[in-house]
Length: 118
Image 1 (cartoon, rainbow, N blue to C red):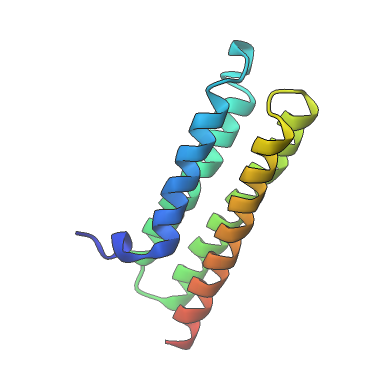
Image 2 (image 1 turned 30 degrees about the vertical axis):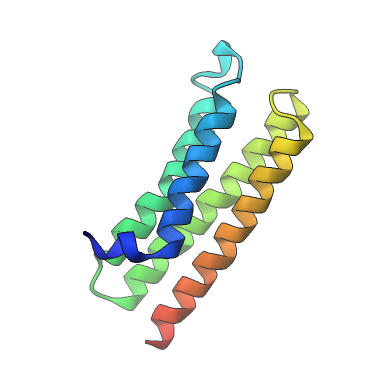
């Protein structure tokens, strides 16, 4: 088991990516290389950057990867907003994604803070 698998933020990021994949399956085929791809890549980027950050030896490097992961969460919210406005997702899915992204952001902030103090 890798140390990152013990991190709740990483597990939540994997669950968030699963949620994004589930929601984007219903997107129109012509969005496969548009919003579908963008949202999926941004969602997967969160757990990937947490993973890469945990492999770094300095706190500053770790913090930078957590910042990138946080930014990827914001990207998903922005892309979900466009998706909602285009009618690809409903309000319920939008609120679910936004809420999960907000939770993820709080967890990442706490994770970053815990490494700064340690």
